[in-house]
Image 1 (cartoon, one colour):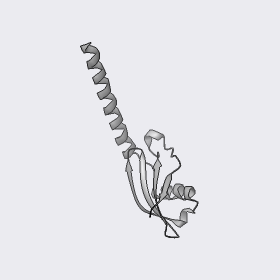
Image 2 (cartoon, one colour):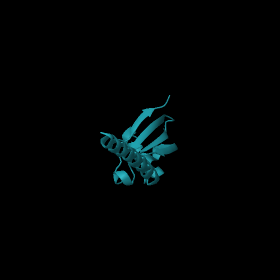
Image 3 (cartoon, helix red, strand yellow):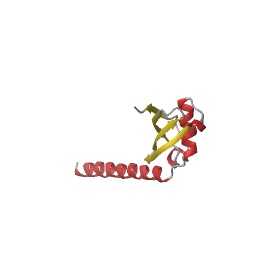
Image 4 (cartoon, helix red, strand yellow):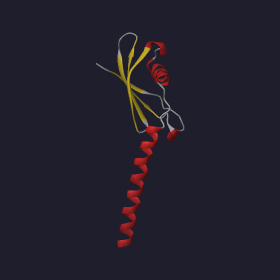
Length: 100
């Protein structure tokens, strides 16, 4: 019983360390440029990329969070998932909400 419990705890610790390492790899290998973000967000919001201004961005794990402003002064907070080594550069369509 003791060996089984020890192996279970060791396996869980290994998986936790592996997943924590994956987040760091994803963050450090983010391929998304500012223009990529503007283009993907513009498509989701129905604007031209030239009508979007990137105000800020940050990356955590496989997610990139961006705040953008449209030409009509509306601001949006968007989440882009992917665009890194772990997702083979694939980016899911952004999710955006209007900021008030």
